[in-house]
Length: 278
Image: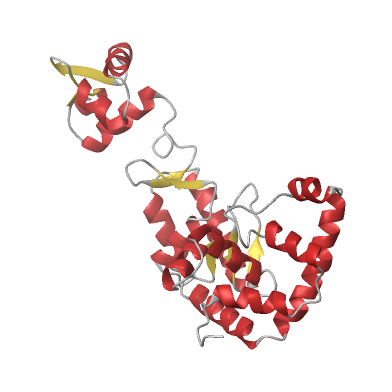
């Protein structure tokens, strides 16, 4: 093998080559983890292919993983890969979203595989070791990897503090700084933590905040108009607003006319926020 901790393709082949898997088990592993395809196969798809139940496929996968983990433990390069990933995670605060980590490592390496297959292979190898740890998507977070328990605890502490305090005010960066300074966390690390959150997002104009805020996730044309005017800081013609929010000009004009509590006509076809004149 090459002296390169990112030679993922060769490492996958080496691990599988040291197992005692039969031909069917190897093919199930290959398809289940997407080692030769963009998208991993589902249990049902594999069951249909081999004429067995989903549960039987699950059993074959579980038995194969035991053998694969034993094989990975015998190959020094897998430890080098893990050391590299853990060291990389240390620079991101010990946490990184699954999609981001896969993309990062893909860009750092010179893979022979297509990007989607490379990522599948990397995920496969990481699952064969005890670290880094994988946190499956739940109601609070997207899929992410973390190096150790204290990194997970710090992420959860920052996240819960942000959610609690953002319900009282919308001064996002001020709150973020007040939370991370005592914990000696840098802003880039804190923003990396936030990237795995389902509750915190980035608005159309780069603002950070709770995903249910109109400023972050404007759901109606009226909300989008209000945000466009607020961010521009000046009156705009309705056609300009329509272009900014990618909506039909007549629809935008109609909303501006209807909501006199928020919008005011400044000149022919040009509107501003009523609050500017109060």
